[in-house]
Length: 454
Image 1 (cartoon, helix red, strand yellow):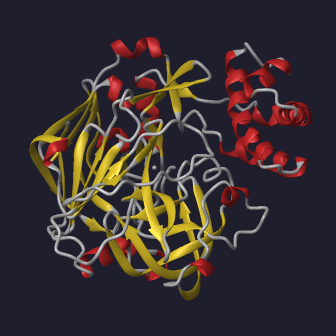
Image 2: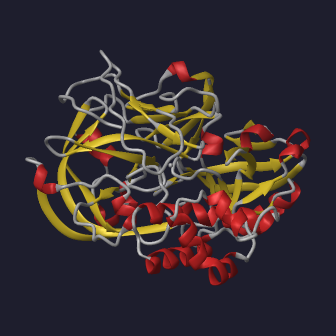
């Protein structure tokens, strides 16, 4: 259902809470886990990384001795999974990420149950295993997780993280696996049944300051004022009721079902309504349908150029697709994924197959969209009303300004996502909202709180 965004060693203790620092890092698909520094005393921070303010993740460890993995902390799913050393050679996504090797762990216990999970923009499958999980300054013993042996498509190919750690309710856990959060509580590793997210949206924040996940409480240094709480209405995702969503003077939603989801980058909603919102802010589709034509006519030439070391942007110029703005943008996006495959020594047939998959997954005009950056000063605010309180997002907050190849692209913070019954129709408040508003997930009282982030 998702779009497709920190733990270390410790002894069971009664601690105030576990703080996991989030870290911002530069882009680059070959990035590997940083070493988390040990902080003295309690709380101990769990760092989060971010990639273009669209993915927030941090390091956990599995096994003894510990094997490190970057995971996306996801309140919209409930399972933990990482790539497996048993991944076949042709699974390029596995090859680009850290892989768990059970033969290297003294605390591994076999399970073997088959596992498969489907997200809104990707899927993966494998089998279950059991081992010790390092998180913050604590160790969760006997944690069941999935070793992934298949990650089809391009969703996880370009992901900056290795795996996903779900923080939603046990009721939606695949194979009824006990989630990490439940084990943290059961093993007395947190003193309160509460966890909270601070996502640093400052584009100029130095590396290492991407945000923070606090397990077992809230961190008062990261928010101001008081919390506005809303009750959880369905213990599957972290679901509650949104009083209203308005763009300027126009209200597009009243008393709508919504979830707070750290694993979704944008604000997602039903296509029929989001298409109206995109039109109201002047957003248009990112790409056109010319992708397949590019592959049919220029596929072999593209592979040849990249194999010879020609930069992606120059490849697009060489096949005469620039400076035509629309086809140039499509071409350069395609080049990004092809370059990864070339660097991984994939065969021509494998590259062409993935190129075709990329074309199939390129967002439509009703999906991810862009706006003219020069219009930002004139765009209206977004007002989201929760628990009777209005939470405002300015254009600078709901429009993502991404710079690639020296050019800045302004991406709309809204995206279409049609969730079928019984869970939908549903709105998703992703990182675009959770960034400006510190969010606490109060499992004990089955409620969610929002306060202004510092």
